[in-house]
Image 1 (cartoon, rainbow, N blue to C red):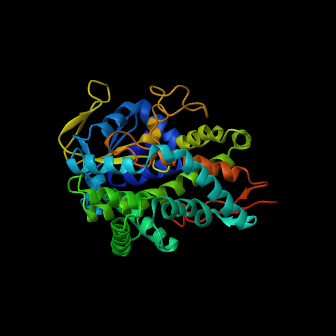
Image 2 (cartoon, rainbow, N blue to C red; image 1 turned 30 degrees about the vertical axis):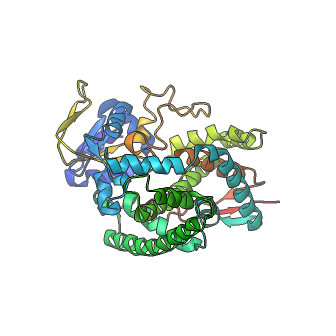
Image 3 (tube, rainbow, N blue to C red; image 1 turned 60 degrees about the horizontal axis):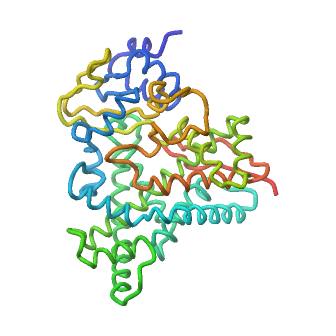
Length: 414
């Protein structure tokens, strides 16, 4: 049988990206292994792929050479679409301060209680996506971040279309998306809806602050900071924009990760048995290594996309040194990088004690996930609560021909 690269080379140039994308999502690990060994940088007309750890790290850390410019049409002036700017540093720093690291243990306890309550109410049968993996981060946004008097169904729409457009509706996705313009239109529609809600929310919280009511959540703390005037160019419109980012970043990514972990574990019964034993142990964090290692095998995002800002070289001085022209879309194939034996020992072995070193589960560099600390406890805790269910049986995850999990039927006994 022909190798991946033999089939690639025998395919007309215009059809290669379609072929490669299918391998990325359907046969990733053997395809990536061949790339790392024989063609670590794969050039196509639409984009260039980097498969080794060192090259992926260079792409994600060299923001001066490889930017997040593709976010700008989707996110405008939001700091995540910027690089080394005053707005990026100021607003990301503010948001890191608002998401107090000290709160992470309490958030884990809250997630455990909320997940357990939703499962108890389900009485042995649930659509795990709507009823759990999206429901918990939606509730976190309402109850912990401060989206008071909000409608969870509307919030789900706001988050869904914003994420779908930003991460799965890029120019290189166009051949695989039925109607890219419809996704943009939906993102713009929900943006207006979310904006109207958030202006009302922030206005109400501003009135609370004026009345001397102390801040108790992320929204009210942001309002309090803005009112001091101590932070440059951080008025109420900036509060609205950043509060919106809390929702958009929390729901779909968390849901996708939890589904991927549990789906992978249920397909590997020997590892599932050990993970379940960890879930039942006295230490709630005993499950964390299983969740993180499963995500290494099936991450929510197999790559991070960047735009080359000036003519440069990837893999300088190596046999695979490749010139990258300004304007090229580059995919740092981090799923492959997390199996690079140059960076991780015995990468093909599932090792729940591996630890976070040389991982890309939350990105790295300038655009590392803002919610890394919260996600690192919310995802494994939701997994833990699911593994406590007696006699859990799961159907196939239904993606409804899209990029993210949409429905997933579970049943259990007791």
